[in-house]
Image 1 (spheres, one colour):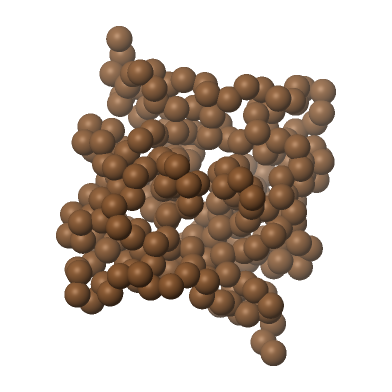
Image 2 (image 1 turned 90 degrees about the horizontal axis):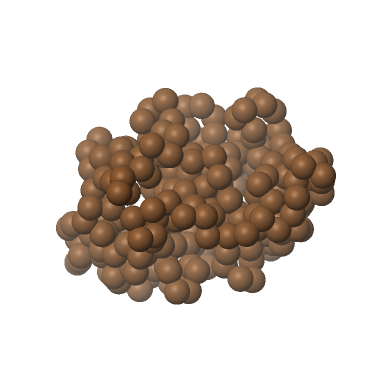
Length: 133
Length: 133
């Protein structure tokens, strides 16, 4: 049987920067937790270790989500879209996903003509490390 | 009151190519329908018209989702993530989202060591136009 990791990699169309956008979704609630980026090594590491590993564009290195904060995303399933240029990670989120201490990163919404913050800070990240790491 | 469209645009960090990834999610079920790209004009058009408008990288022009297929995504809410470098569109999907005729684009999953197709074709797109348009 072909290696499923290499099989998946062959189907992903990485961009000119070697990256593909990856959406992390809580597997049971459907909550969209965050959007991050993966290169080939991040996909390999995610599938091999069973936890989300991204490519940090700001630090220019692999970033195992939760490596500092403990806010690990355990992988339940990896999906590809029709064109292979986007990845969906169904995960079990440990704690909160956002570096601000909110449960997910999409907490700003246009409502009533304003950009409103629609989710509370659940964890004081100043005392728990950096969630994005 | 400040124009909410310009306010949102000021908070979005478009990439060097002028684009930001946008995830479309069915507002009531949580289903992730697709990932596409928006430039400033796509964000403006989406908010002004109340339906998802993307930037087609393949055709290099604005793409009002459903303009040919009728598979319009009516906007319920636009959200930004913590860093402003990703957009979430909560939408009401008309028909199916994927150009293959499946309800969403993420129908390929790694299961049992294989890349499996996990969703049926619901609409024969050869007779209904191009869903991606």
